[in-house]
Image 1 (cartoon, rainbow, N blue to C red):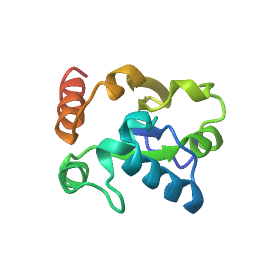
Image 2: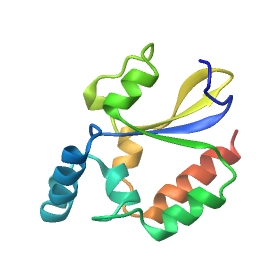
Image 3: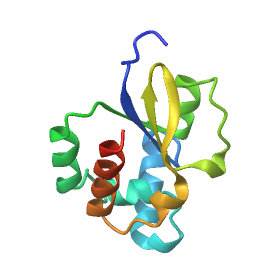
Image 4: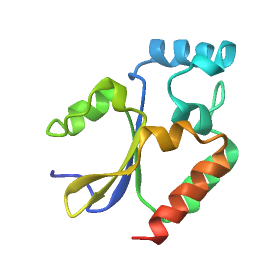
Length: 127
């Protein structure tokens, strides 16, 4: 895994990359948030930009973080098999191995940026 730091959190959105997908996701998230299938995206991003509190946490946490869409994750980590239904998902990369950090169900039960921040801090304090 050349070029990948030894330890980091890897966030995987339940969406594919690209401008067209981002636009469609933003519209869907705004018009019908209850049926939007990526709570991680909804919590961390508004219609046009990253939510301020989340961005501040991300920048000041001291934790290396990588953010990928499903298609990018599959290219970056081809040896990790996850079906489309597993996302959103957060992994931790430790000792060159990805381990699940926060699962889809946990992420989808979150209501706010604060819930996500608290869950990350709590989980990291156990490591």
